[in-house]
Image (cartoon, rainbow, N blue to C red; front, side, top):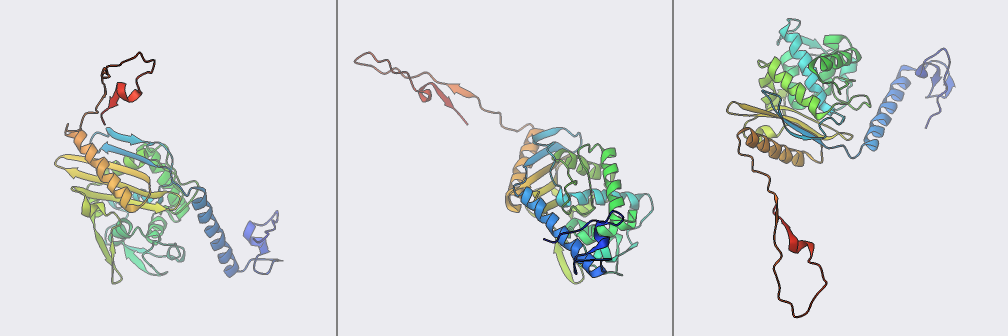
Length: 331
C-alpha cells in the first residue's frame, strides 16, 4: 500500500505524487488512478464489513398506511438502487413544476459517463431525453443516468443528494440519509424498510400520472433491449412496480406494489439471499397481506392440552409422564 504524506497547506491528493513517490503536484492521470483505487477499496471494505446483510421486511396497505407485516422495519440498511426511487421522485417533481418536459434533452458529462455498472453506456457529450432517462432508471437501474439527472437538477451529485435527504425528511422518512443518486456504496447512505415503504406510497400518491413507468418490462436503447430487474411483474398477479436494488453489503432488496381490485399493497424486503428467494418471499408476504385485507387470513392455532392416557400398571412407579404425553402443539 502506498504511504501518503500530508502537507498542512495542501489537500491529500495535491502534494504527493503517488506515481513517482516524489513531492510535487499530482498528474491528472495519477490522480484518477488514485481516486479509482480508493473507490475500489471503499467498495471492498463495505462489502467485507457487511457480507451478510440484515434482513428486514414490511407490508402496508397503500391507501391507509396500515402495517400488515413487520420484521426489523426500522433497522437501517444499505438501500442500494432503491435510492433511485428518490431520484425519480425529484425527477417527477421537476417535470410537474415545469422545469423539465418528457422530450427535454439532458446532457452527459464526463463524470456521469464514468459511473460504474450498472450503466446504460452513455458517452460524454451525448444527451438523453427525460422520458428515456426515466425508463433507464426503472428498468436498467443505470447509474450513469442517475448521475445525469442529478447534475441536471442540482449541478452535482453531492448537492442532489442533499436535496434527496431533505425531501426524505419532508415525506416522513426520518431514518434515511442519501449520499448519491444511484445507490452506489457509501457508509452514510442508509434507509429502512419502513422509510422505503413511505417513499413508494408517496410516489404512488403524488405522481399517479408517472407511476405507470414502474411497470415497464423492458426498455430499448442503442439497439439493445434492457429487461426490468423486477421479475415480480411477470410472476405475481397484480404486481405493477416498483424497484429492485443490490450491492454486496445490502443483499437483494425489493420494493414491490400489487393491486387487486380496489386494494393495493406495498411490500419491502431488505437483505434477500438471492433474487429468486427474495421474490418468492415477497409473493408470500403480499399474499398474506391481501388475505388480511380480505378477512381470509387463517387464524393462528393454539396449543392444545391433551390428557395423558392411563396405562394399567402392575407395580407402583415414580416415573413422571414425559412432556410429549402432556402437550401437543398443532402447527
